[in-house]
Amino acid sequence: MKEKDLIRKWLDNALTDEELKAFKKLDAYDSYIKISDTSKKILPPSYDVTEELNEIQQHISQRTVSKNKSYLGILLRIAAVFVLGLGVYFFFANQDTQVNTLAGQKVNFELPDQTKVQLNALSEIVYNKKGWENNREVHLEGEAYFKVAKGKKFDVHTPLGVVTVLGTEFNVNQREGYFEVICYEGLVSVSYQQNTYRLPPGKGIELLSKKINEINTQDTTPSWIENKSIFKSKPYYLVLGELERQYDVVISSKNIDQHLLFTGNFVHSDIQMALESITIPMGLKYEINENLVTLYKQ
Image 1: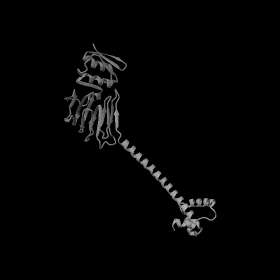
Image 2: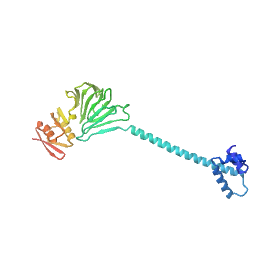
Image 3: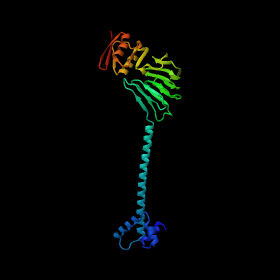
Image 4: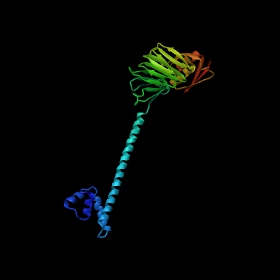
């Protein structure tokens, strides 16, 4: 029997025992009883059954709408949490991993493909760890030495050029408008201004004063890995900049031509010895006042 018919017979006190059992099993049974009790208090002894039925149905309809709104609210909250969860997931999935070094600091770490990276002082590498398989590239500012896992390939982006790795060991140095790439093992491809240079072991290139120069080396690793900086015919400002990074000092020079070429080296463990190594060959003297180093002519 339909719910509406059960309600009508209940209001007429005409329910059979079986129908009464069915009526009591209705979800809204308690509501019907409350409405009926309230109606008896405010209505005269004789009342219109049809009118009361309509009143009950209207109440139930409102209750259903309210219930549906409640379900809708719950669903909207669930959807909001779901959307927020997706947003958080994609936010963190797309977040880049950033590795920085301070002055005088060197850091070793691995890329997602087990490529080993050594980052020189005051340098930065950025890459996407989560999306590495689909975006195999790193962004470098400063200097880093890469020992690439066998069979792996990725790109190193710098402000001055792009280095494509072909399973190798190589060093990239990008400082103050200077760009240098040296291959120690395997093969490296360097792209600069629509030109491509392929470097086998012992070969390198440098961009200095907007000019590309070839480099030859018999070294098996860059010198800074062994805590020493070696320069061969490099502008003096590059030498001073590297010393500042390795010792966390500021160098002030008076009436010194920093574009003069310097050949020599300095260690990263003794600032006095390092300063003597770069000033004596240039005929200069120095003074140290806390973290300020002043260079001047003799």
